[in-house]
Amino acid sequence: MNKQSVVQLTSIDKSYRLGRVSVRALADVSLDITRGDFLALAGPSGSGKTTLLNLIGCIDKPDRGRIVIDGADVTALPLHRLAATRRDVLGFVFQTFNLIPVLTAWQNVEYPLLLRGTPRRERRERVERWLELVGLADHARQRPDQLSGGQRQRVAIARAMAGDPKLVIADEPTANLDSDTGARILDLLGEINTTTNCTFVFSTHDPALMARAGRVVHIRDGRVDRMADGGWQMAEQMPAHHLAATSASAIRHLPSAI
Ligand SMILES: Nc1ncnc2c1ncn2[C@@H]1O[C@H](COP(=O)(O)OP(=O)(O)OP(=O)(O)O)[C@@H](O)[C@H]1O
Ligand SMILES: [Mg+2]
Image (cartoon, rainbow, N blue to C red; front, side, top):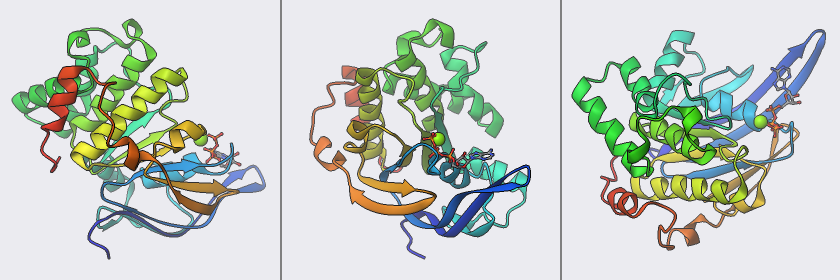
């Protein structure tokens, strides 16, 4: 196996059962995602993007085929081992943010670290660093309902990143945001990607967002239709004017090993 491979999907089939009817959501999907990829899944509604992200995210299992995440074949793993993979290797960003409403921004970012048993001091350092990097150091004590949509998604990104994931999975991370805010969130993800070399895979309907991806995988009727290069390589050269000035400089000094 290629050492740089973070996700390897081989001949994946997935169907859902609806009463007596079986809906084929994915058919013979093979895909390699390598370290540092900033990969968009594009395709019409119902084409299978979420199904594919759920399989990569170890939230669901395929009917057939093989899934290797970070060198481990997860296809045959029991559910409790999948939960450990989700917790230790993956980070998730959702369309609807999925923050815990009664917790502050700070506590939301801390929560997965608590689940992992990260010691208190390290938790504090990571939460502070990531809230700073996403430009929310001054909003740490606010609950999600006291934040804007874009700020909520920044909290979710900080939460996903604080655990040093190998791979971040984002299902339409900008779909609930206006286009300006969505573009800023994508810039932030791209900035984190180029600085930390963390691998990202996200789904989107928005052509403007596909243009920011490093690679676009087009899905149609549950199959990989075609792959194309995106435009993020060019965006890399742009100044990080969307990030708070302190965040932009801090993020550039992150160790690339994260
Ligand atoms: N839990 C489920 N039970 C039955 N069918 C499902 C289920 N989830 C998805 N499907 C079906 O599987 C197919 C792929 O759905 P999926 O949600 O992966 O598409 P998508 O590309 O994410 O669409 P969208 O862009 O609208 O989010 C669709 O035909 C859908 O109706
Ligand atoms: Mg979907």
